[in-house]
Amino acid sequence: PFWDLSFPSALKVWLEYVRAKEITFRYSEEGFPKGLCKAKRLFYISTAGGPVLPAHLGFDYVQALARSYFGIPEAVLFSAENLDVVGADAAAALNCAKEEIDAYWREHA
Image (cartoon, rainbow, N blue to C red; front, side):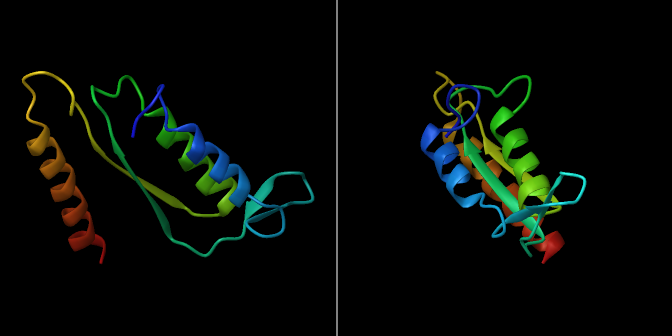
């Protein structure tokens, strides 16, 4: 879920635990992190009660971790928003996000 312009703190703690020197990354001679993971892409799926504006800071953070500390070159965001907005069609928003995921898989399978 989208909480406090990002994601729940438990996910932040988990990301700190799994980001481990010599396991998921190492430092270059210049002092920059170099990711050691073999994954090609990371999927970030989020829901939000309202609109996520102006940016999805949680995704931006995880995308930076994926590239810098894990070595995952691509991060993809899928989001269903406005789920708690009175008058909004939450089921349609969820279905739209599912369709985006399905379309992505068809294109990148």
